[in-house]
Structures are given as structure tokens and as C-alpha cells.
Amino acid sequence: MKRWFLIHVVLWSAVVLSGCQDMKDDIDNLKNPIPTGMVILQNEIEVQNGSSVQIPFRVNPSNFVPTRENVALDVIASQITRAVYGTSIPEYTLVDILPDKNPQGEELEGQWLAVVQATEGAYYGEARLALVLTYTDARGNQVQMTSSSISLLNSYVKLTEEMVALNGPSSCTYWNTGTDMPIVISTQLVARPISEGSSTLFDLATVSVKSAVLTGEKAAQFTLQTDESGSKWSIYANNSTLEFDEGAQYVPVTLEVTLEDRIGGNEVTVTKTIRFYKTEYTVSQAVEYKLSEWPTDNRQNLDLGEYLAQIGVTADLFTRYSEHDYLPVILKPTFQVKDATGENNASSKYHAVFNLKNQVEDSPDPDVMSNIVIAPETNYLQQRFYTKPLEGEYQLWLSFQYSTVESLTSGNPQPVVNATIKVPVKVLP
Image 1 (cartoon, rainbow, N blue to C red):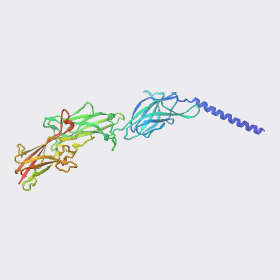
Image 2 (image 1 turned 90 degrees about the vertical axis):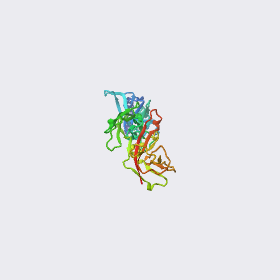
Image 3 (image 1 turned 135 degrees about the vertical axis):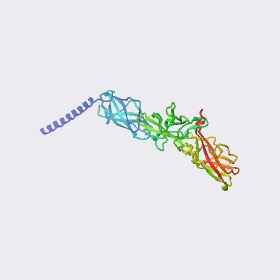
Image 4 (image 1 turned 45 degrees about the vertical axis):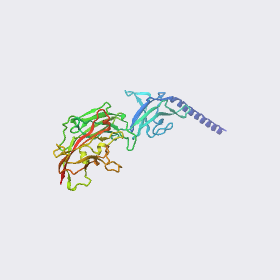
């Protein structure tokens, strides 16, 4: 009997002690602050891919301490990846919770910073973010609370040299022989794809021009002007006595533009070298035709690719950075026959009609002429003789002018190339 009494007392004590522990746990839970609200303090935030951003928020009551373990990133909506309640997406990760501080370095009670990392990569992202707080309620159950406000997080691509370029012709004649004025070359900052094969262009609104200067040995002979936009420049020679190195047909000058990423703060320098060519080029070796070997169709074709390159007309002149760039077109080429000294007209002795020809892709007729030429190395001068020329020495003066459609429709049309090629010709027995 006594034994059963002792067992009863022990069991009763265990129950009482267990109840006391539960009561103690309940009391401890009641002592812990229970959050009643959470508010994000910044409506819109910008971050550069590969870096982190701090999102300020508050928790009520102010003595509740959030941690990385009980706070989660809730991506409500994203243009990148579909999100569900209480989850993040691979592009954004919550990495830490830090106390917020004032400018003096003092912690602000009840105010915190959620540190969010944006994944490195070439993409633009827009996501509506909330914060989810997990806590234990008075009954000991874990529940979640979502912040009563959200923040729009915009992530941007980090600028690299491949994402921007300076457009416009890379070569031109330095002086306009028709107006006795310098030829002005314009170049503008343009966006390039953010990655190879992408159709998304870099956002130029995220960068600012820090500096733009001309460099090169003869840069002092040129003037650089910036338009109101700050992203377009005009370059031209100061006068007609431009100094050329001995044997050189052009003077190179380089535009260096330093850009600053306003979000990430990194700097990138892009360059464009423009070759300013002379207004004349004289071929050093004479072209020879023999009357004894005269063609039966009375035609003599003269390849011009090598000569045109000496006045800046190469395939590079027709390079575009976007489908909206204007290509130069040839206007009014003129051809004259002079005597050996280049002084007198000799067309009565050199009985030919001249036509500029170039190969046109997919054309069955090799004589088809197009004024839009992207491969000038295929150009040739077709000389159709209506009778054999007289034996002797001559000079062919071939004058070319290339302009852009954009220039021709403006109030101040400017040629890109305005030069004459002088070709000595010998007609032998």
C-alpha cells in the first residue's frame, strides 16, 4: 500500500513539474516581443548586376530583432522569373540583415537593412520585392508576416567596352575643294547588344560622359565640338594647311570618350580613330595600253580598289553599328582626260566614254551600277572607246564625292569624301 502511494506521489509530481515547465515556456514566450508590422522604407531601388544593395525597413515593436534566419525575400512579381509567395528567384538573394545607422554611425532603433545580392550577368531585371518575417506567436506556433509595403528593384548591366561604340565614318577627306571649307565628321555614342547574339541594347541612360578628348601626334590641328546632348561630337581640321607625314595620304586622329556608370561607378573608355585624307592622290606607276594588243570590243577596264583606298574609300567606310546608320552614297563622279602635264584637255586624242562600275550581288549583269557600295575594292572604271586613242601619255582625273543621305537631307550638306585620283596612262604602239 505504501509502495503504491509513493508511486502515485511521484507521478503527480511529474505532472505538476511538467505543467510548471509549460507555464514557464508560455511566460517566456509572452515576454518575447511579438512583431505587429513591417514596413519597407524605400519605394524604388537600383542595383548593378554582380553587386549588392541595402533595403531599409522597420519592424514594430522596435525592440523586435530580425535576423537573417527569420527574414526572407518575397519576390511578388518579376519580368525574369515567375515567383510564388515567400520565395526568392535566382537573380536576387537576401544575404544579410544589418542594423541601420544614422550619418553619425549610431544605430536606429527598430530600423534595419536587408542586404540583397544581384547575380552577375548581362540582363536587365525588374522585380517587386517584399520581406517576409517568420516568428513564434503567443501559442508557440510559427507564422509569417509580409511587409505592408513593397519596393521596386531595378537591376542593370555593368558597362563594358563591348556594349557601346562611336559610330560614323572612320575616314574622310579633310577639306572640301568645292566650298574651301573643312569637312566635318560627326560621331555619336551608340548602344550595342549587352551580350553576343542578344537583341537587347545597353541602356545609355545609365552612363554619363566624363570626358572627351582628341589624341594623336597631330590632334592639335583639329577641333572637337560637343553638341547639346553631350553624346555627339564633330571633328574637323582647323585649316587647309594640314601637315602630313612624308609619303602619307592621311592623318589619323583619335577621339577618346570616358564613360562613367552612374549606378556602379566604374569607368570605361571607348575610342574611334578617324583618318583624314588628302584631297588628291596621284598613282605612281603609269597604266600601259598597247595598240598592237587592242581589245576587239574596244573596252579597257581599270581596277580602282587600290586607288580608292588612297582617298579613304574602303569597306570600313561602309561599316554600320546599327541598321539605322546612314551609309555613304556616291554622287556625281566626274572623269576627265588631260595631257601628260595635267594642264590641257586631251579627250580628242583619247576617244573614250567612262563609266564607274561595281559588282552588284545577285545581279546577272556584271555591268550593273549601284551607288550604294559596301565593297569598293570591286569598283572599276569602264572605258568604252569609239575609236583607238592616239599614241602618247595622258592623265585620267577621276573625281569622287561620297555623302550620306542624312547629310543630303540636312540644311548643311557635307561630303564624306571629296577627292581626285590622277592616273597616268601610256598608250604604246
